[in-house]
Length: 121
Image 1 (tube, rainbow, N blue to C red):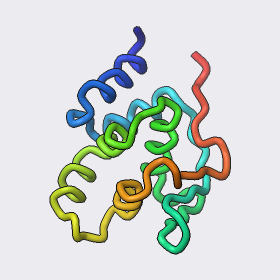
Image 2: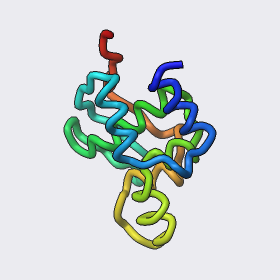
Image 3: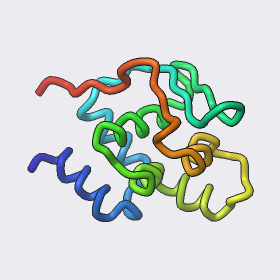
Image 4: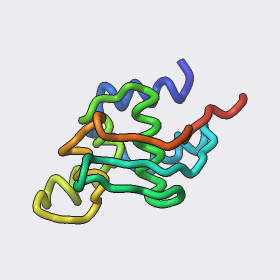
């Protein structure tokens, strides 16, 4: 099992131990990133993220989608941004992509193109 596979397995088995910085490091190590417009949420509550905006969210949602992570596993990829900034301050307004994903989940995440492409070894 390679490092990427082990990391994905760790996300699935122990999502509460995952940190945002490490997820981004893994993504950057194994994937080519293309800034891509994406939407999160539905109707008037939708957040439109233009290409190059909220790149961490774009990378994590794309990565999580590729590996069929569930909502909790995906949210934990945001590390302390999710577990501390959002969960400990439920009435807050920061981290809008995380808060919107909590409400709407995968059903309302849409990318306008391919975000991540595996690097050649």
